[in-house]
Each structure stands twice: as structure tokens, then as C-alpha cells.
Image (tube, rainbow, N blue to C red; front, side):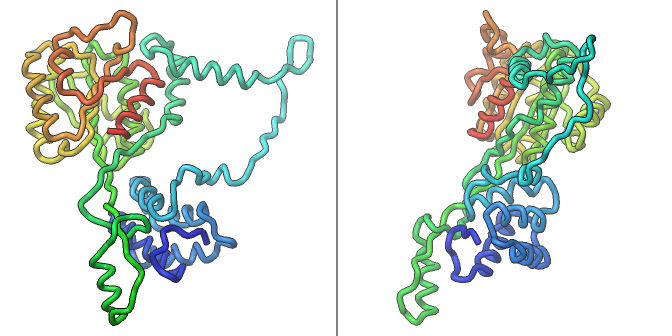
Length: 369
């Protein structure tokens, strides 16, 4: 069996210690799940890191939301999960084509050059979403699955045993006392990593209409791939749409959002909306220590000074504020709008939001925040 950090002399003890660490990190495991995990690993012949990973995913995780915590604990004990293959990748598949398209003279036509298809997808990833046709948008929506979501993490005040951490004096002394003073293995520990909440505030006012649909699809993708994410829409008022974003299908999620948002394609009062978020959600703990992503063009019709004051208050409790502006990288653009001028001093990042490639940069910034 591929071993992680050596905590115990017995492989069985090591597996049980791993499940205990997962439970401490917040994974809802139980004795039955622990036993099922040990039995599943024992059936592996020989055991591998990938096998142990999928045995744990199948027995210790009760839903998609548990994967974030599970992956973090597994990486701590057994190493990175990046090289662990998906189940469909473990067994190579052969695709058989029953019939070839024929040309006018009856000869078989060659399939489209894969390099040409890849080049078209890359062009589509970098194009401005507002300029795409309906057919191109449908192709782009299918490409959202390629976006890599990064859950931001933070160090907690609690510790877990670790092979290369700082010396755990208390645990080492306890081992020596159990051995009646005989020398014992020096125990080490490291601070536990905890997921950081992501909060998305999406401007759905009239000026943002060409990008609102794409940004809400991005919010749905983030909500499905991270733990504890909250999503709100901004316009003339603040609307929480987190429950709608829990729908598995993005089309269903957007339909639910459209039903619950009364100010779609209306005016923009960012200062009042951010203030409502601070009063109703931010100070209660939703934004405390979180990464806040605010997607807007900054065209404020209300008091820009209020927007600056509310963002300053939000910045004092949030870990970071990432502002996504769909015009950020366009030729000739300057952030001279009253809303942007008031917001810029309080932002951790100011990034573009006009294309799928730009959305990947947004996700990377969120993961690094």
C-alpha cells in the first residue's frame, strides 16, 4: 500500500488515523464508513495511491460538497490528487464509427482535423461574449466544464499530526511517559487547512445585460465546485440566489434566478446594494474572512461615495475583494466611471470578465486570494 505520512506502525492504524483526520476536518464520516473504507482498501491488489483515493471517495464522501474537504485531507496524508485519474480515464476506450459522411461523388470524406477544432475552441475561449451569436454561446456554455475551480484555503488554529511539521512537544512527552521515560519517536504537527468561503455579487443591471447570463453561469460553476459559496445579484436591490445555484443543471439554475430577481436589466445602485449586503450578511459572518467576487462595469447611478464607503467596510472583514469588469481589457478602456474610481482603492484584484479565458483568470485569482 502506498503510504502517506508515517503516523503509526500498522497500515490499518494509518488508514483509521486518516479517517479520523477527515472527520476532524469536517467530513461527516462514521464507524460504518470507516470500516467500509478499510474493507475497500483491503480488496485492492496491489493497493495504490489512486486506488486508496477512489476507495475513500466511494465510502467516506456522502455528496459532491464533501469532495473539497476530502481532497484537502487526502493531499495532506498521501500527496497531491492532481495525478489521480478519473474513473473514465483508468480504462482506455475505443470509439467505433459506424458510418462515414460521403461527398457528392460518393467518396468518403475525412473527419475534421482535430487541430482545427482545437484552434476554434481556443478562439472561442478568448472572444468577447457580448459579440457571440446564439449558436456560439451554446458552444461556449458547454465549455464551462473545462474551467478549473480553485477553493481558497486558510490555515486554522488547530493542528493535525504531520511528518514534516513542527515538533509536537506535548504528544512527544506523552509517548515518553507511556514508555516509562524510554526514548520515543518525536511527534510533529502542522496547522490544519480549512476552506475559505467564496461570495459572488453579480450585477444584473441593464448595462451588464450582455454579460449577466455568462457571469451567472460562472457563479453556478463555482457554487457547484466549492464549499459554502454564496451568490447574490445586484441592481436596484440585493437578492440572494444561493439556493437557485444549487440546481445541478445550469439552465434550471438560471431559470430559478430569473424568477426570483425582480430588478433584472434595471438600474444600478451598487452602493445601496453593497450596503444591504454588509448589513444583512457581511457583518453576520457570511463575508468575514471570505473572498468576495463583485462582477460589475461600475456604472453607478446612485451615490458613488456610498459605494466607496461600503466597500471599505466590506474590505475590513473580507479576506479579499476581486472586482470583475467585462470592459477591463478592451482597447481604450479607462476606469474613470464614478463607481470604479470609488471602488479601486479598496480592491485586492481588478480583472477582466468578458471571455471564458478571462473567467479562468478570475478563478485563479480567487484560489490564490
